[in-house]
Image 1 (cartoon, one colour):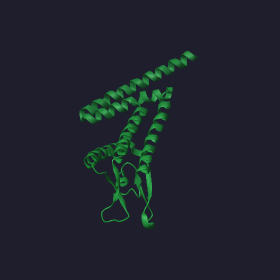
Image 2 (cartoon, rainbow, N blue to C red):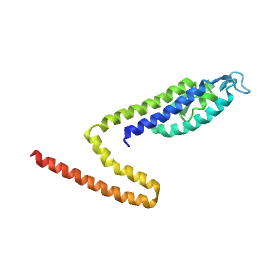
Image 3 (tube, one colour):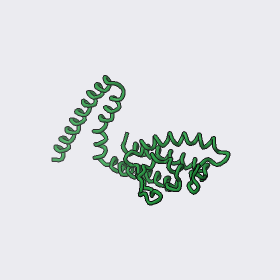
Image 4 (cartoon, rainbow, N blue to C red):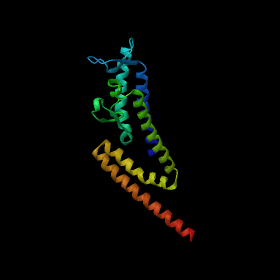
Length: 192
């Protein structure tokens, strides 16, 4: 699979999380935190408790997938703690529940905009990779890298399959290199 396509799939996974969280937030409203007079949390609006509980499970599941998909593209947010206690760094996707539990510290809109930033970073990197993959050097890199992908897949199935995959892909790399070497030599001779 091309790197650009993989990045676009990862962006789509993070987008699913964003959309599910945004949809759940439509059915929630600020409410006083138990035992706290001035602090609020987001709770299901009256009549939507079951729907929000169901959506919460789905959002949690999608957050796990989105955190894996975001990888190194996940941004870190810094929130100001009350009473001058400094700031706290939060990973955007992994800390999504803070937007529900402490919206006064992490407003949901701010959270969602940071998730959109992750999507943008993944899509931007995919655009760059797509441009690189269109060049001759990019196509050669994909061709040469293909055996590595086969080895990775084969190694995940079994030890014997991994060993066979290693032998086959190593042979394919050697043959591919010889073909490229022969093609380069032929082109060099034909140009003289």
